[in-house]
Length: 485
Ligand code: FAD
Image (cartoon, protein in one colour):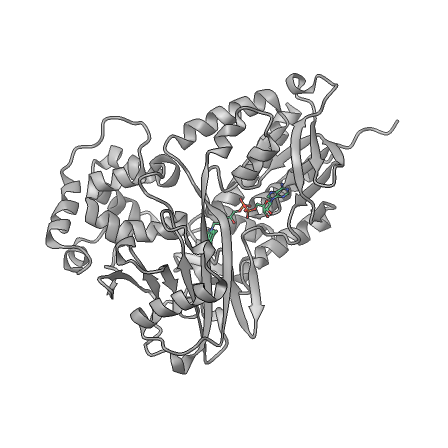
């Protein structure tokens, strides 16, 4: 009888799943024993939220568009795939960002890091915050640190340290781009744990932020020289570059990439006393067929993972993670129809402004590779927690709302050359207060019930692309360690 070749399966072909499969392959190849890897993706395309569209010379991102350069996992992966030469930086001439206040664009004061002021003079001069609001923010220097170390909401933390104005007029609109969330529901420990750590170490989050900025040059040491000056980085041909790179590496290593194949259930394989013994898992597919695998990594959205693991009471933890739906409207124009200098990356819209859009990126000003000469592309964002009525509108109505807002704020009257509407339903996970503890409980109970199943992805420990890659890699190593131990 020929020896059994261990079969590892990854469910979900987004960046987390592809990274998990890549690092599984790398590790198992290094160990030298035979193995089999399959990636199973419900939709017809790999990449999940990543969706680059090339149209008429434009490079259009329908989902994520870039990532934080200082986060190593994605840069490491770019090197491992030989793609570091494809990285590109933001246009240094489009550094300015604006925030809307009473229907007008105000420049964001220099030195704001994640909305926290780190340079006091520009902050004192900004028209975004009232004199009283500035005095309230300055109280952060003297307010005592919180005694309790338990989780709290991001909104509660920021209001406590910096006051309501800074929270509502600056930080919340900035963070809306990352979570589209209600800051009073988001967990501080799961979203910006560094804020809480700074308060504990420096008492003041402003002082903590100032101190942490001093480390920036060291933090960029891992980046190729060409992009070292940039806070955000992407790929010249779009983010699909990393998806295609992963796909090519996986195929070359013999992995099976199955698209258009959905999974409906995951259980411990019956009849072998498997659960307690750490035995295999059974995967049931949409067409009814079943496969038994030796190791399984689930990287779907958490509400999908909850359905797959429905028989486990602990799946409740995953089911309870809410997701917000967002849309974006991409519009292309002739340069001559844009009545201003393209020297800014975009603007943010606080809730109180009552506009339809939550932000706008002047995409081709920020990223020079995204539009052909003489053309401009911009992207408007719609939808956040508490603003979830937009799905009932048609694409045409969403374009009209976005056009109304940019006419008002930017004076763009022209009709777009073309527009692209992307609806990302239930796409932004909202980590609730206490998220980390609940996940720890989930992991412990899942490992007792199905030791060869690992669940991860953007709904767990970080939504950014680098965080997803890190989680995919951690999942691969943790699962192999467990199986081989
Ligand atoms: P997903 O990409 O959601 O992949 C999960 C996959 O699982 C999907 O392909 C899905 O089809 C599949 N699946 C689901 N159920 C099943 C099933 N039953 N069987 C088989 N397959 C299944 N991050 C950044 O770093 N920079 C940005 O600029 C940025 N912008 C963003 C903009 C938007 C509009 C959104 C929504 C997110 C953005 N993010 C950004 C976050 C980042 O894009 C996501 O967190 C990340 O792509 C999620 O990757 P993932 O693999 O965990 O999940």
